[in-house]
Image (tube, rainbow, N blue to C red; front, top):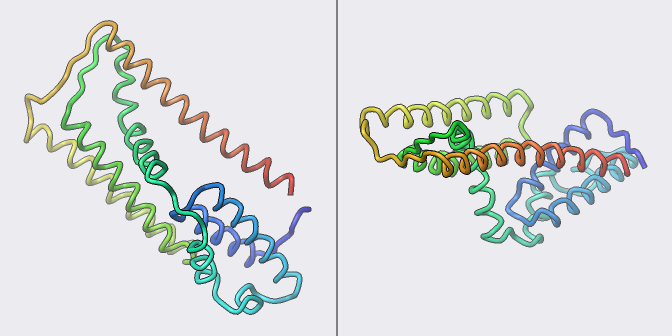
Length: 209
C-alpha cells in the first residue's frame, strides 16, 4: 500500500530511517526496524498527531531506544566497511597497472588506509549527530567536514615529496602490473555495480509497499 506522508512527516521519516540504517547494528535488523518506524509514523499521521505526541517521546530518543534492542554489528562487518573505503581509495592507483608498469608507494598506501579510517569515522559520526538537524545545517556541516578531510588527504599525499622523495616504493612490470591493473578496474566496476544494485533493490522494495 502506498503511503502519502505530508512534507514534515516525509522528512522525519527519511531522518529516522537514515539514523537507524547508519547505526551500529546489523543491516537486516536495521532495515526491518526502519520499516516498522514507517508503519508507526503512518499510524500517527492517520490519527492526526505528530510522532512525538502520539508515542510520547521525541523521534531521536525513540530511535536510540530501538537501536539499543537490536543486535550489534560484528567486528567482521565493521572491518568490511573500512576495507571497502581503503580499496575505494587505492583502486584508482593500481588500475594504472593495466599499462604494463605500476609503481606503488608504501607511504601512499599508509596514507590511504589512514584516510579511509579517518574519513569514514568522521562522516559516520557527523551524519548521525546531524540526522535530525535542518537540511541547510546538515549540508554545510557535511560540506566542511568533507572539505577538511580532502585537504588533509591531499596535504599528506603532497608531503611525501618532502618526507620520502625516493621511496619506499614497489615497482611492478609486465604480468604482475597487468594483474594488479585488472584487479583495480574490476574493483571499480564492482563498486559501481553494487551501488546501482543497492539503489535498484531499495526502489523495488519501496514499490512493493
